[in-house]
Length: 225
Length: 319
Image (cartoon, rainbow over all chains, first blue to last red; front, side, top):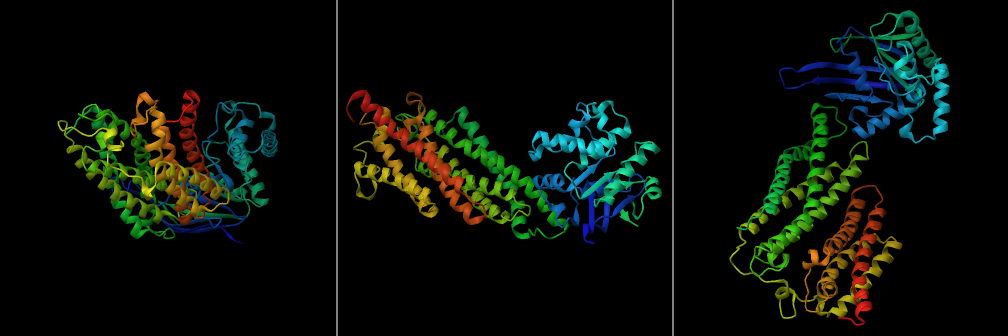
């Protein structure tokens, strides 16, 4: 299997050369292979969300090599990084990052707007995904009126709209109860079984209990264990 | 030394741009000597961030330079009120030996700045910034030009005396001026034939995509246009056969037509030269730049010709 993510000696320092200098990531080297379901496990402040953000081209490292699908993501200028994210990645956030004033359907469709997809096609694709996450009955509900679990399912549908080969999820179950967490993990597992590589930053034990063939990567104080 | 509020504002902006260039010099030097896109080192990541920062500064600085050129012409025209003998910018420019040099320097800087801006835009379209060194070599050229320009600007404005009488445009460009002579021993009719023939050449080389010849023809068109406009077309704008001046065109009495005429002419030549330079330095096609060039050159020739035709239709006679 080919490497989807390849990292060598990655470092990230915040506020370098100031009294507040902080080494968020220290000499990280790792690979994630195609079709793997991985979790980055560590306590709060261990650097897992930061590492996920670097992999998702949301943050640039201070040094080191990072390739996602053989693309030098860490070096991409912002314009290309945005395009890369749109075309290759699905990102799920702990706080959902939905537009509260938009309906569920509009939230899911929004991610397709920059691709100039015809509106009818956008709607069809969004409805397919809402059906996949069991949210089609809520398609006209405003995002602000959804429960936590529904919001996360809506966010998953939005992350899938461009058919990403890699899903990065940052604490997707942190704000959910047990039942909703199970729902989210079931969806992610199903996606993984259909060929999508999934990488989740979490400290939730439930992933190890539910996901078969899970690869666990431990991170502590910015270093892999 | 001459003084006006517009001059202070102009020099302040020019000085600020000069300071931004000096500030960027160290980073430009580092990028030119240490850049290696494939390196995962801390230095390389730092240089990538610095490039983003410097490019942004230069983008605004050079865009300001482009905007400042018409402002500079306007400033010269306004200063003519303070110089005895000056009727327009022509007298102000010829107030000392630095005026013409400064004007030519400014046009050259506009050409190089515009090329840098286009090259910068092309580089940002690529993931690995392959034209970064070309951009910074161009920056170095601009750095020295802008420092030289500031120096000449200082010499020019500090050496303008408000007490000495300067020449007016009719003394500089008029029949008995003995100043500028037409090139190649041609008379004005010969210049006009060549001027129109060059536009036809521009059109044909655009259709046939002979870009090198098109660029060369554009440079020739720029030179010929200067003489054709100053010694022939301007007389139709002023409706006076003895009034030959490339600067009075910028005045209110003539509806500021000089900005359109000189803007389209300089713009037309710029796009052709930039088209050639950018196509040699990058993998991008620059046909659209040549198209812009032809459009601007055509606007210039049409507006010039329109003045002659309008005069003839109105008066039934040529000047």
